[in-house]
Image 1 (cartoon, chains in turn red, green):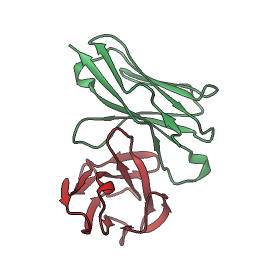
Image 2 (spheres, one colour; image 1 turned 90 degrees about the horizontal axis):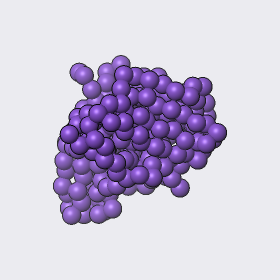
Image 3 (spheres, helix red, strand yellow; image 1 turned 180 degrees about the vertical axis):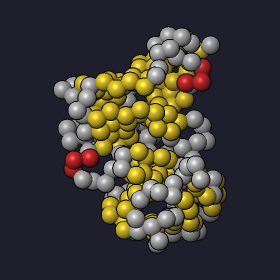
Length: 111
Length: 115
């Protein structure tokens, strides 16, 4: 394992459907983050886990979004009742201390 | 409110010359700064960082300068190479404020190095 892995790379879904993304961080990294990036913008913070505990959530994370990291390893991000405005690149990152590595992202398109 | 700003959306430089990418921030609590490089269809890749206790950090062809009084940092790439063509993001965090290490990103500068 040489990096942060995200699955799937691309997801096209119809408005109103639920989607779930997975992130596998670098194995020794205890911190895990989800970011969202839209066209022409930098990544925006969504939420942060230290081990299995979700310690911080952005106001961008509406109640349709839920993230879990049940065993302190991989994480999932679920979006319920998707809306067209949810179309974005969803990036996962992991870190140990201050070295943060990003995955390649999951590009979500809501049609 | 954009706390980290990159006011130049694009920059073109001749191969072998210096590339200077700029970044401004507004939050005086930021004490750790990073530059990331992003190729299309990939996630951001860490390039270089600087702590607020320093004003310069160098790594090979890449140097980051921090001017705390002006709340400004810049990335210098010398000499620029065609493989440096990518989008560069500036990011900042407030480590002492104990907010995890959430990073605030700028909107990016697309660098094109012309052979």
